[in-house]
Image (cartoon, rainbow, N blue to C red; front, top):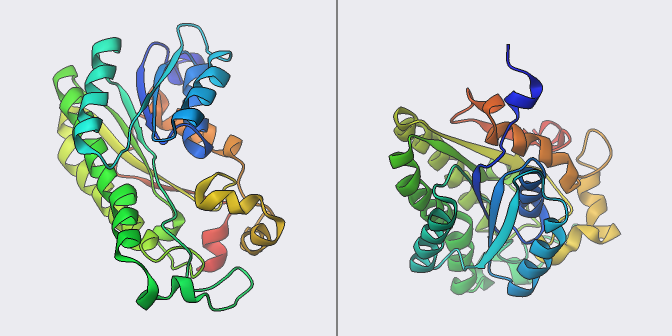
Length: 275
């Protein structure tokens, strides 16, 4: 029988986290690093990237390594080059967290229940819609494509995609393109699990509910904005990034070996209340 240490052993594994300079992505990077993985963070925010790498380096586990590359996940050429750089440095790529995402703009309602004309469909700039789809959906395709390019020759790996409970409901205070992008991500994850299982590559999605992160300018740190989401929770609070670390480690480790094509909700029961 495998020990707990063996089941959750990720020591020496080569890991990429997109959007890893803050929030949920940073939590993914931190827990894998603490357990001895070699982690590379991709993020467009150069200053935040440097700060996060410096902060996390102090908590590296035995054999752990943390470094970063400034990458816009919407830039396909830059993404391919960044993946190649990780493979060159680590010798392989074992686990990829396709995490980068944005709230593309205001929804058509405010948290106070008032109509928000800036989020009305007729007023949404096309560029806002396009960027939301590019980062929340197309970048997942780009990330998975590059991950598979390196994982197939090495006999497999794990891909974990950050989706959202917004993929299964409609949120009036979230930018309009966010929900359809995340719904498409769910279908893409299941489709990739079907295609890639034969090559030893597991593909799963984590569907967070409301978490305190920097998305949408970190608005959930604002008490008034947070209250609307706290009312949805069955346990009276929204998520802290510490809450997601255990799930990330499970899916990235041998303990998660029988998960693939799964859409795993972690939301404090919010989706249960809303449905």
